[in-house]
Image 1 (cartoon, helix red, strand yellow):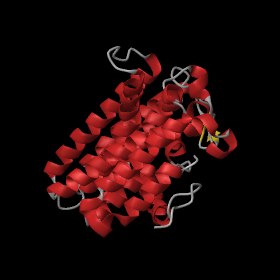
Image 2 (cartoon, helix red, strand yellow):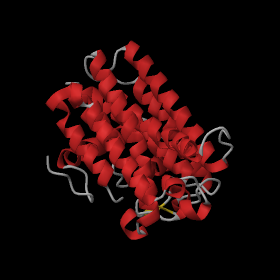
Image 3 (spheres, rainbow, N blue to C red):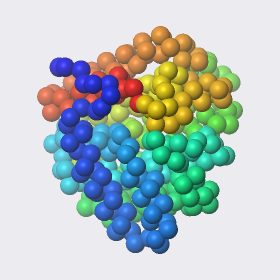
Image 4 (cartoon, rainbow, N blue to C red):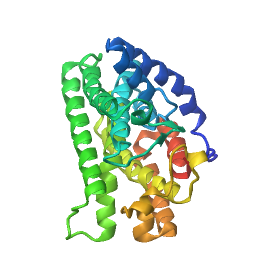
Length: 297
């Protein structure tokens, strides 16, 4: 299999982005929000993101022969939570970022009050999306629980990342792994699990999708660590080298850049191995896995 370009996701993902964008915009309009809140929500969501999480939901659904109609509904819910987290991460009390995806962050574009409220709103809308979806009631319950648990873990990871107080019994490597698996990995894993829920849930397929999501979730954040260390703002679309300046725990700061690259390669291979029970149906996920390991923004 030819490795995809590190600049852009594989073509199969690029072809899905218009479908994801259309669904996101349509769903936000359907919630009948006040005009200023709707404008802020659309600005935060419809701003050229990579759509990694919803794409993973779509591709995982495809790998288990799941329904595309269900997959797009699940994908929207995951992306709404992700966008909520970005709005709040950018606030002055947390990362104090002024640029996101090459554009002013929401609190710079509007104000802090609107950014806080728009983020709160997106988190709520994600669960409303599941409630209004076409999944049966049992799967709606399982999805709500999965998304709530993942969001809780994401917040836990953000607390560790921002405020510290990590368990002192852990080594520095285990501490940074704990941060990354929660802050970033939890929602990526959820995106994959949601995709798996769109088809018949054969046990070996569920386990394959879950393991894949766990490996790429950690890998994604380690790649982000290296991008923050070596990337330039113009290419990445946001400020870089902020982690090192803030003294945050990252894989490069704890283990060095070269060992971080070795771990990325190991996780990429483990993710590839996890997909074996799915056979050729997971080829698009394999291509995406390669790009996730090689991306430069």
